Image 1: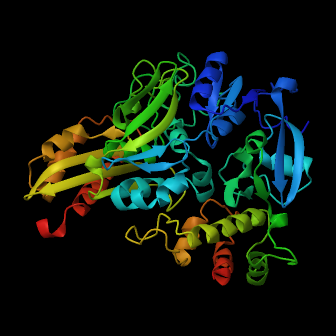
Image 2: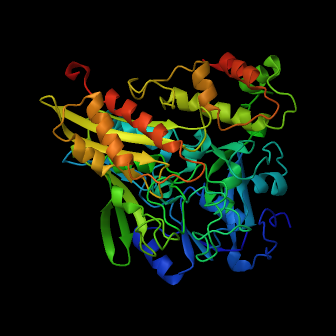
Image 3: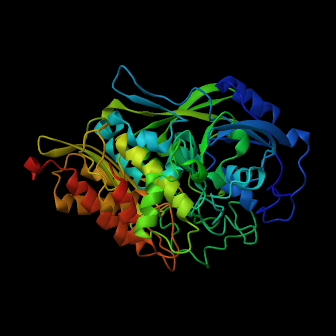
Length: 189
Length: 330
C-alpha cells in the first residue's frame, strides 16, 4: 500500500476502520471524497490516489519545498499535512495553477521564457510557492528582509532580495536560482 | 508511521474530554513538527486530537492594552498582524526569522511553543537520547554538538529549544494560557519551558492533557523599542546558532525596564535576568551593556565544539541593545 512508507521502522500495519476516515477536498476545482488511512498526507493522496503527480516528493520532511501546493490559497508543504485534517479545504496544485481558458499561468510562462530550471523536479513547488509569495506580498505580509518600519497592510514591493528570502523554502539542487528570481520578477504586477 | 485514530473536537472542553478518553493522544496543530516526528517514529500517538478548527484563531486587543493571540493563529498571520508589528516588533521579527513561508503558513502559535528540539540524536531512533528514552544516554555530548547548549545543560541532555518565537515571548513578558482537566491557568512564557535536569523528556511545564489556548502580550512591553536578531549558518531558512530578543525602556537617561532573552543557547529560551538587573538604573552605555551581558554569560559551560556561541551571543546582544536606545539619549 502506498500509505506504508517512510515509517523508518518497518512496523507499519494496515489501517483498521478506526484508523481510517472520510475526507472531502476540492482539488483544482473538483470535489473529491475519499476514505483515507489517517496517516495519508496530502502529497501522497494527490500523487497516488488522484494521479496528480505535479507536486513532488523531495525530502518528505518539509525541508525542500518540492511538494508545495496551495491550501485555501496559501502555500504549504503537502508532505506534512494529514489529508484527514484538510476535510473541506480547497487545494490547488501546479496542474490547476492556470486560470480558466489559460494554458499556462503567467509564472509558468515566465519560468519557460527565463529557463528557470534544469531538471525541473523542484519547479512545481517553485511555481506554487511563487504564486503564494505574490499573494502574500500583495496582502502586505512582511518578510525577514522587509523594513520593519513599513506600514502594515500595504503591498510589499518585491525586489530581488525579497524574492530570494520569500522563496528560501524551495531548494533547487541544480542551482537555477538566478533565473527563478528573474522569472518571478517578470510576473510582479 | 504507526496507525492512529483521529478525532476533531468542537470546543476546548471537548478537546480536554477527548484527551481524558485517549491518554495516548497528541493534539494536532499545524503538524509541521509532530507529523514529521511521527514519520520518523519518534512520536507514536494512538490518537490525534485535531484542535486546528477550535475557535482559537483570533488576535484580540484587550481593554488594558494587552494583546491576546489565539493558539491556532498561524505564524505568518501573527508576524503580519499590524498591532504586533507596531507594538511588539521583536515578536514579528522572530517569527519571520524562523522556518520558511510554507511552514509559517501552517505552524500555529501553540504548536510553535511545543515543537521539539532538532538535536539529530533525538530525531534518530538508532541513536541514544535521554530526551527520547531516559537512560539510553546522550549521543551528542561526545558526538556532534556544535548547535547544542552552552547554558543550563545537564549530564543527561544538552539539547536546545529551536523556537525563535518563544525567545521573543520570553523577553516580552508574555504569558501562556492553558486549559486542562482542572480548568484554565496561565504561566509566564519565560517559565513555560524547562531546563533538562533529571527529566530531559519534559520540555515544558505543561501538564498531561493541557491544551495551549493562547498567548497574552502584556501592555507593559507594548509600544517599547524591541528587536530580535538571529545568527545562522545561511541567510535564510535555518535554525539559530544564537539569537537575542530584547525590549528596553530608557527614562531620564537611565534604563527603567529591560527584557532580554537568548535563543539557541539552552534547553529553553534563556531569560537574562542577571543582565537585566545589572542594567536597571544604569545609563544605557556600551560599557553598561558589556558589563551586563558578560555577567549573564559568565556561567556558560561550552562543550568541545560550541564555545563559539558565547562570543557570538555576546556580540548579538550588544548590537541589539545599542539599537534599542533612543539616539537622543546617547
